[in-house]
Structures are given as C-alpha cells and as structure tokens.
Length: 132
Image 1 (cartoon, rainbow, N blue to C red):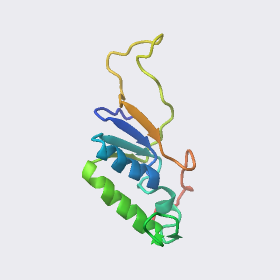
Image 2 (cartoon, rainbow, N blue to C red):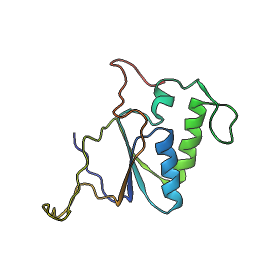
Image 3 (cartoon, rainbow, N blue to C red):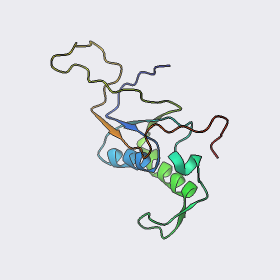
C-alpha cells in the first residue's frame, strides 16, 4: 500500500533512538516531522530486540534500560506532534520537479528535507516475532 504524505517540513526515516531525537531537534527549529519505520512500534532495535538491556553510553545517564530510553525519547518528541507511519517501508526516494524531469502538478510527498536515521537499513522482525 502506498501512503501519500503531505504538509510536513521533514521526513525522518527510522523511528529508533536517533530518529526520535531528530523529531526533537527539528521541532526545536520549528519544523514538523513525519517518521517512517518498518517496525509496528517506534524504538527500533531497543524496543524490538533488547528492551531490558542496560545502555551505558548515553550522555547524562550512567546506565539506562533500552525501554526507558525509548520512553524518554518519545516523551521528548511528543510536544512537537510527529506523525508516525509505522509498519511501512520507504522503497525509494524520488526528486519531483527537478530540472530536466517531468513536473508533477501535485506531488505525493513534498517535505523540504529528508533525513535517514537508521542503524541497520531495512530491518524487519522474524516472522511470528512480536515487539515487547
């Protein structure tokens, strides 16, 4: 299924820790964000694979569980009202209206910026596995 995105300043590909923090970063600049991820829930591998795992390299936290980190990042992003497109994969990026290309009167997706925030490319869970 193809979903058409409109009215956002930035598209963030990847809803893991870095993607969630990007929502905050862009929000502080007054930019609205849509976030796309292949998983059915935000948080990336921290949510899907190891929510109980302690993480020791987050500034300001000598130790934090992966699930707690994601919870804090979601709370930090929430005031900026990101739109999440979970369980979806970005298959390609196409420049619309570029010189020498066909002009489309109404593009399906027209953010002013796209940022890819993913650690493992196209990540998907094993068949039958469920996020915790």
